[in-house]
Image 1 (cartoon, helix red, strand yellow):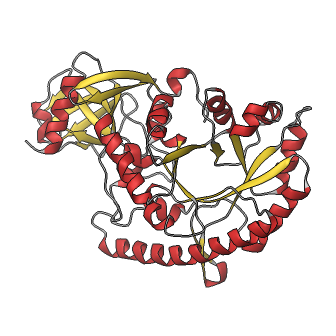
Image 2: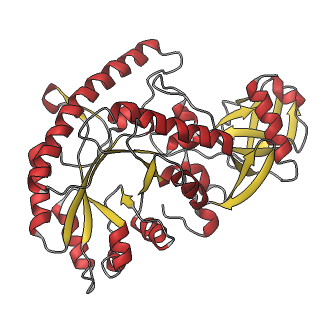
Length: 400
């Protein structure tokens, strides 16, 4: 029996009393992935990205481990909810225009102390001030650096379109703007190199493309390391008491922590290990989060149909954004139907061994987005479900 077949047998036994659709997290795999992130971080703290987890119980589990410290959140409403729930160090990774949220933040000392907001434009400061509604608490601010790799005088750009702040001078000038404005305090810098951390460098069947990605990423890491160090020096000249410099992501942890200027890294997807992280040479892990759909039809030889499963991930549309049938091994989509809203035909010889009511296990393309489809995660240890915990959705929280 292969390791994957053994996993399938365990998951089927653990959930035999449960009807699909359902979602699980294999805690042995989850913990092993967490330990690997800590190992790769080399002693620097890992801030867990909540958008890749979207389950309070699992955020608490990973933060209880040595090597993890703090949450990187994705909306202001989520940040405030987590802070009210007892999480004490929350970095909001994206600018917000949530005026009601800012009014609440600036009126509550506990929330203002727990949450740091992201800023890359003076207009965002003006929006926060206009939303205060009498709130006088000092807002903790993190400045975001654009990490994009620019070639040919900027005519070629590699990387996400995030912050407009690219040079040390631009970031330092915004730091001065914040320092001059009452009610704000710069406490950190963030720089997320998504073109390194979130792009696989071993594309199946594409050796030339894979080599090109590795060469680009190596050059981008060198350029960013120099620029990030210069940015930190420039900002510290304005804000000597800077508390943290955050960088990286699951795919770049060991490279990012090698920079002296970086004090912490962020990671989250590596805990669940969705399919988009299969194509990396820098690390490997164990799939921990899966969902199961029930077989409801057997249309013919080599074909079964499962209920639903059309859960595409965000990003540029493509086959790599679809979940993949994972267990049993050897199933594939019908190219004419793909992953369907209500029914999904699956092809392959493994289909002939499946009966009506059997479970087919899938991996989502991305991590936390799976939790927007399910209100609970069944936590599996060995061949037993040892707990069932709500996702954000299960707690009535759909932040995006």
